[in-house]
Length: 146
View: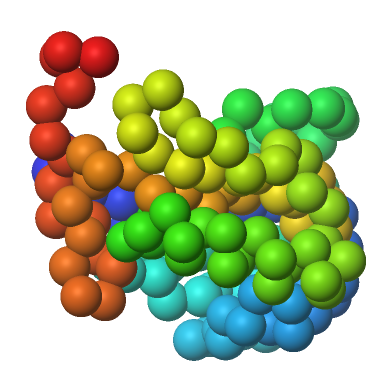
């Protein structure tokens, strides 16, 4: 199997509200959508949102459960200042901040927030992650010394 991701699909409780949140608050526009699913073109993969219960039913598993979902969605930027700019922009819009901006021990800078269904997103500057001019990840420098 090639080391890549094509689609990350997240099951949500209220697709209409999630659609509005990402479109209006974050500014991400869908590339394809219908009443059951929404796809946002990311850098090299699609981020999908669909109703949690129908997705679980389709897979054949229970949709029950709450709490930490065991994943975060990371959005890396080029500078610490960009992290701070995003923090102020999102806070001004009333978005729930889970962890205030802080310096990481390795020299990075980050904060965490959640969407309206509790999915956790991180905006971060990481000096070890190389991005191209449009934000695609080009690589990750060695962190053996950390």
